[in-house]
Length: 383
Image 1 (cartoon, helix red, strand yellow):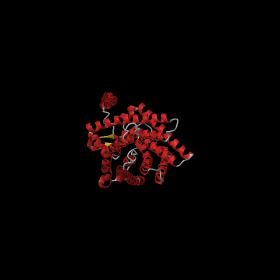
Image 2 (cartoon, one colour; image 1 turned 180 degrees about the vertical axis):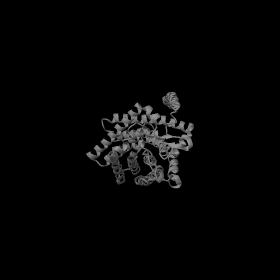
Image 3 (cartoon, one colour; image 1 turned 60 degrees about the vertical axis):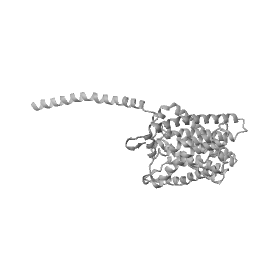
Image 4 (cartoon, one colour; image 1 turned 45 degrees about the vertical axis):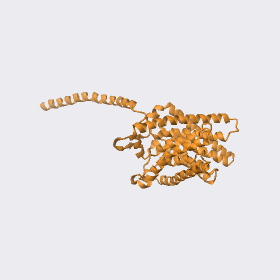
């Protein structure tokens, strides 16, 4: 009897303690989301706007360049006024977006320089440091003629923009074969092609084509870009086991495989003055890579479940390919080439407009849910 009473008292005590503890645990679980929400609402936008957001400006600048190219090839058309107005609207949109993002990123550099240093140390974030220069160079290339009547102004601004690009070239390309922990075989991922695209965009500038000294610099930049493109392309194809791979939400950057040879096509045409056999080879390569990627939609299944800034990596590679197809259609006359140029240009415009509308409708998700999150604790970074 005594043992039975002791057992009953122990059971009663245990039940009483359980009833007192359970509500406390539920309160903690209920309070935790509200605490996280308040912290998230007070977080600064500047800490989240990294260089990867300049993909939006690259896409807008590429669209402005596309419409400028269409306008140049349809000066005698009845739609010339509409096309010219559209080109100017896209240029103004690019200018406003780029100025806004540049101001935010300058503030990030001033007040949160540790986060910028974290970007420099990240195997993906480091490559997007080329994006601001690419954006401004595309804006310069797509500038309407009435903005700067004096052609020399373009050259001076172009020189100003390629200085940070050359500095990044020395930094990034140098460490690929000198820094033991940052060899290309270790750091290789598709975003590394942005550094190559930066050099190719810099060599694209047609406004300084007539200047002999500047043309030599353009050839030099094209050489830097294409030499490293061959090395990067082979390295990425090998898929070395020790390399840094990208997470599934960043898989739209695989379209950079299309952007690089497409931009190389445009750059070499600008330097050479004609769409020769080299341009055709690069164009066919970009077209083949485009078909290879679009025939594998499951590759992007996880990355398109939730809208993010990474989606903008779909836009500008398609625009570069459309620009290359327009140049190809001008060189090789025929219904098939013209139809291909119209098809690719139409897809490019539709993709850009869709992404632009999604960005407006989901601006909170775009800003507060970045694809790259950099942490200054212990010098580490998170994706």
